[in-house]
Length: 439
Image 1 (cartoon, rainbow, N blue to C red):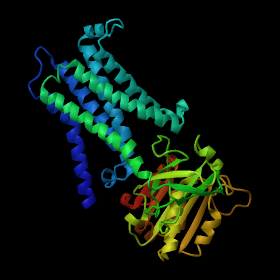
Image 2: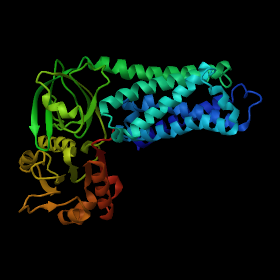
Image 3: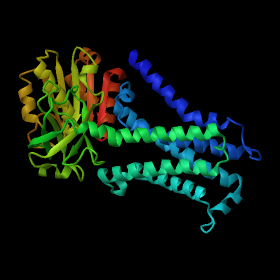
Image 4: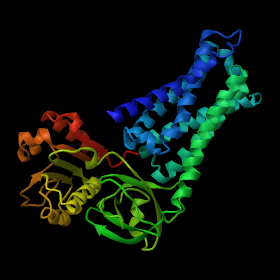
């Protein structure tokens, strides 16, 4: 209940801040000689810019903000609300031009005022941010390069947007209005300073070093990280952190990975990483002794938030990493509750951790079901894709309806599993999921 109230509080704060520019428009009266459509377009532009600026807080990994929802939910909200904010911003010039075509005259290259140029540049940058984010895969932009583009473009777009508003001055001439935009801009700057300077400065005190790099099945590698001069990281099983490897913590090049190690151990952190992108394809080349920094822990995908008489884990590919963290923790705790693991992989050879999973079956009450997409001849286990039929064959009705489910893997697999669980009548509140590529 406390988390629900806390979550509702932050939603209310967000809504107030998003619409506050519309309220500020009323302060001091509106400029004379302005028609409805012009005022309406300005209101949309103001709200869109305010919503865009709030993204500095949504993506700042403030734990007090992500606590009620989980950082993956906040990031999904950031993605969707950013698109809405962009269309609000885009509606501002579109409505102006449609209602008053003569507005186009100010866009003559030889005569365009700086304040209009700032607004156009901000719009282009916002369009670049949205396009490269939504179509990053199709455009072939690596995650690391996209983060650089995204970060610098967002700062420049927000600054140019405020410059445009202050320069046009029709709706910001009153001292209270100017003070509002100055305060709003200052808040964005402070959030950015904390994320890019304050937090990295604190991380300098808790460095890690790579002790070894372990080759795993399925083109995956496990980084074993040891705390260097401090007591280590406390996290809940299933959580994740952003890893900066071989660079300063001030570097914008960082990547999120789940902790695959037991939460009962503070002397090391393990992250299991599959070769998928520019950074991950080179993870095997990491030399022991490499300096590393971890920003975390984050995430609500953890057994410690969902007490139940038993757990069902459904993993696909490298989605086994956080599940292994939870299984290893349960084993170290001596937990006696029944556990089921449904592990989907393309082939038996690519099934990561299969040897250790076999060993865990002797330490906890674990039953493992492997679902292999392309099995070898003679394979006697489940084949194809995860389905309601497989779950029904392996779980009794009481187990299906009482246990908590943790699903992690590629997005298509998650959707198929959720549909299967819904078909079997499993309540949605008993299903926790996390995407391996939610960013």
